[in-house]
Amino acid sequence: MLEIYLFSNAEFDDKQTSKDAIRKVKEIATENHLFDLEIKRGKFGKPFFSKTTEMFFNISHTDGFTAIAFSNKEIGIDVEKVGYFNEKIIEKFYSEEEKKEIQASGNDKYLQKVKAVEIWTRKEAFVKNKGCSILEEIRLKNEGKI
Image (cartoon, rainbow, N blue to C red; front, side, top):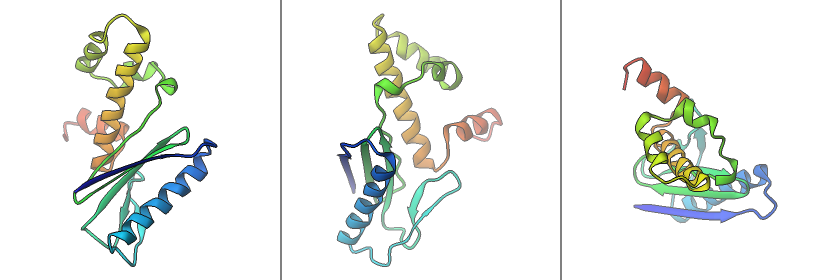
């Protein structure tokens, strides 16, 4: 099972967007007969249902847009706007293979930025699935633990 919901808050209010997302999560959980719902957060902030192992979810939002994914397995999701991407992130967090992938997108700076955001979104969704942060993922790799 995999369900993904996308919605927006036209006012771009992150607090309201977060509240709307949690309200939607609770609504969907109730529709799926997950009563007695309690949402908690893991060490790095990943939300989870504390009273069931039948359904997992993850939330991402940016600039008034929200994505929510539900699954019967651990899941991570990320949504980003291209306009917010800081190119310094590439040097700090991207592997050589990922840098080559960006260069392979051509000489157009906007297309490179789009590719960089696409890669970042994959990275975020991957670590959110695992319940950690990108910095934690890099630390564990550097320590040889993954």
